[in-house]
Amino acid sequence: MTNVVEMKVNLHCDECIRKILKAIKKIEDIETYDVDTQLNKVTVTGNVTDEQVIKVLQKVRKTAVKWEQANQTLFAN
Image: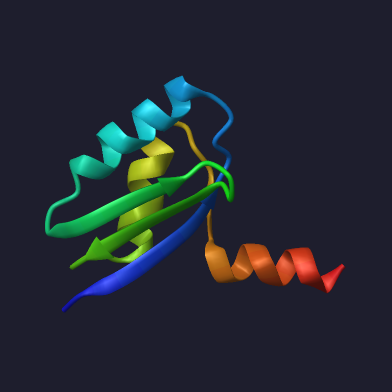
């Protein structure tokens, strides 16, 4: 089953981006991945869950929030 997981992640330097990409590549059963530095958004497509992506990002000391939740918080204020 293919899922699209979109996360809001603070991408403030090239080193952070490199660590995130390296961590994401280790997830099994991913088809595609993308890091959008302008939106601070990480998108992973494949047989993957939100929880898997969050766990992998936490291992590289990155806090991730589901994209929908990040936008709801932003527009709720």
